[in-house]
Amino acid sequence: MASTVSTASIESRREAALRFLYERIDYERALAVPYDTQDFKLERMRELLHRLGNPQQGMPIVHVAGTKGKGSTTMMVATVLTAAGYRAGAFTSPHLHCMEERLAVDGQSCSAEELVELIEQVTPVVLEMDRLAAAACPEETGPTYFEITTALALLHFARHGVDAAVLEVGMGGRLDSTNVCQPRVAVITSISFDHMRQLGNTLAAIAREKAGIIKPGVPVVSGVVDEEPREVIRQTCRELGCRLAELGIDFDYRYDPPRGLEETASPGRLDFAYPAPDGPLELRDLSLSLVGRHQAANAAVAIATLAELRRAGWNIPEQAIREGLARVVWPARAEVVARRPVIVVDAAHNLASIDALVHVLDESFTVRRRLLVFATTQEKDLRGMLGRILGRFDHVVFTRYWNNPRGVPPEELDDLAEQLTGRRCQVCSRPSEAWDVVRSMAAPDDLICITGSFFIAAEMRLQIGARPFTMDGSPTHA
Image (cartoon, rainbow, N blue to C red; front, top):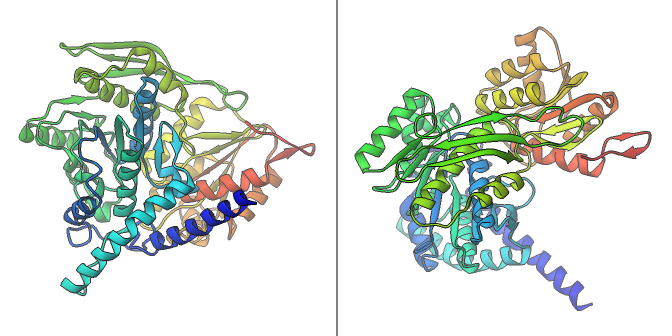
């Protein structure tokens, strides 16, 4: 009875804690997202951390920005550090199913009880900052949702005494709440078009925002290969006196993708070379659990980042790199959640990530027919994404996620699809309905792909788990 009461108490406290958090300004859910020093204030973030005892001070940090690949790279670096015997924290966003996922130590999400304690510790500090802000100016606000979650992560890592924390930037870099840290290595995974209303409509402008995480004298690892944004990062490093390691120039990789993933799971194979004069690193035939050439590029950036830590004296043996890359888990990234039919869930939500997903499907799956469930977010390049993906599928179902108000109505997607292809697609108002539709039409040797957003990936993973595809009445899982 005592444990039941205790569990009930934690659940009620968790509901209250999350209610407090979700009532904050949350740009992940806002229909219009500003991006300026009026709304994104690093000084406010510094004050919040100061009032919480500056948990980030003295914490070795790897700071990861980029248009895509930053979450995967964060998890690869953290997983390898854990394999090397270090206690490693990873702060990522957004979460798929629960807030606890964002705060992980050695691959384990923080518990509900820990999350409640963290939010309860932060709440009075936030309320006092609210009061002071309102007294100073009625238009001023206290800490935002993302600022608070960043503080929660740093507190959680400090509580667990991590040896290293790997922090993923939320959006941009220059004004992101994570940018109050003083990292050991700064990482920029890639630059492509996304969040253009906030970050700019050229690759150079976007690169300047991402390069805002670069600190004087701190080594930088870059996976950026396009010349325009690459030159911005180089110039920033020159101005700030930072050593820069670039993909395709200072380090490189070769990737052998897995085949036949519709039948059985198998890893890709990766060769990596970093011929640095003061510490060359060459690794052959690495096993990579995450699928796709884009993940191979992320892995190369992660290994180069680990090489920078090794140069600084960290003990990260080759075997730890092999173990970490082989076992890293990162859901909704070309994730095979079932077979016969094979079901792939991917959080692709911009042009570059859609291109990467299509490449994975072409390269690693051989199927009779492809079915697509697609839902996405306002302010994305809808025409561009649909133009690149519609022709690769035999049947398309548009739907809308309901766990975030920024979803695009499926009727709008269908109208755009007709403009692009001259044909109508199937429209479902809810993910549960879309799942019923594709379940009813798919054969065992088909492929079902669910993509367009983190939010549709999350909702559809729940649908698949609750009502798995069945053949002859028996569920089939990956």
